[in-house]
Image (cartoon, rainbow, N blue to C red; front, top):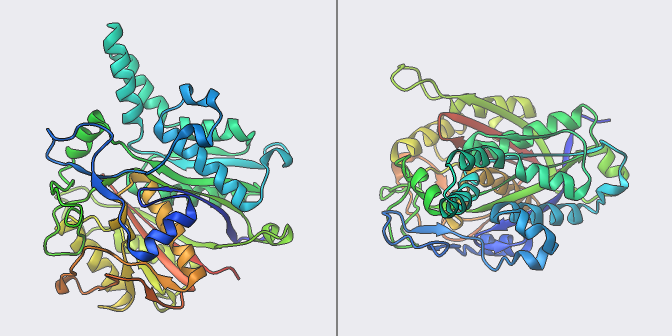
Length: 404
C-alpha cells in the first residue's frame, strides 16, 4: 500500500450548479449563484443575500422513505455521496466489511434541523431542550445516513471546525486510508438558511448587509463589507492511490499535504497562525512555494481578515508571486462545505489547465495579490494550495496535486 491518497470521485451541490459538471461549467464562466434569500422571508434582517442550491428536488434523487427522516442539508449530502461513489465507479456493498467509511465536516447545518424541531415543539407545547439535543445530534446525521445508506461500516466521524472543517475532514480521511482503509467518502455539505441559523450567523459580525448580488461579497476589495452565506459543498471519494490504479480508477489528483493551526487568543500580542498552516502543508507535501501554481483563498471579505490572509500568502510566495482565486464569490461561504468545494475546483483546474475567476471584485493593490478576476486564466496547474479558516481561530491549508 502506498502513502499517496487519490481522489477518484466527486459529488457537488453548489449554488451555481447542481452536480459537478454544472458547477464547473458555471465556475469556469464566472456565473454566480448568489441572490436574494428565498428559503424564508429575510426582509426583516440586515443580511438578505444567500447562495442557495438551485433545482434540487429530493424526490428526484432519493428514495421517498428517506424524505421524512432527513432535512435539506442531509438530502443534499446523500445525493452528493451517491454521485461521488458513482463517479468513482464504486459499489460499497461489493467491498469487504469495514473497508469503506465516511468522514465529513459539519458546522451550521444543524440550525435548520433545529429550526424545524423548534417549530414542531412550539406547536405541541413541549420543552425547548429537545430541540437543542436535536441540534447536537445533527452533527452525526450526514455521516450516519451516508454510512447506513451505503453499508459503509469502516472508520467514520464528523469534524467541527467551521470553514476549516472541509479540509480537516479530508485530512482525517487521508490518515485512515494510510492506516489501511480502502475507501472513504469525505468532505462537507453545509448551510443554514433559516431564521434561527441566520441570526446565529449574523452574530459573528462578518455577514454582508448589501442587497446587490454583484456587490455583496467582495474579498480583497476596498469595498469589502463581509461575506454572503451559502449552502452546499462537495463530497469526494478518497482511496489509496496504488489501489485505485490497480482497479483502473480515473484519478483526479492526490491529497499531497496538510497543515492546521489555531490562532492565539485575542489580545495575546502573538501573530496570527495562518502562515504556519501554509508552511506545514507545503512541508507535508515535500514542495517549495515555487511548486504551487495557484492558491484558492479563504476570502473572508472582512478587511482585517483579508489583510491577515494576504500577508500570509505574500510572506510565503512573495508579492504577486502566485495566482490567487476565490471562486466562492460565486457561491457564498458554505461553512464546512466551502473548503471541500475549493478542493474540487482545484482538482478540476489541474485537469483542465485553467484557474477559475474571482468575480465582482476590484482588487485593492495594497494586498499585493495576483488575484484572478473577471474571466478564467489558462495555466498549467500541477499543484494547488487551498486555504480555509474557521470562526474561533481555526486555520487549515491543503495541497492537492496532479496524480503521479
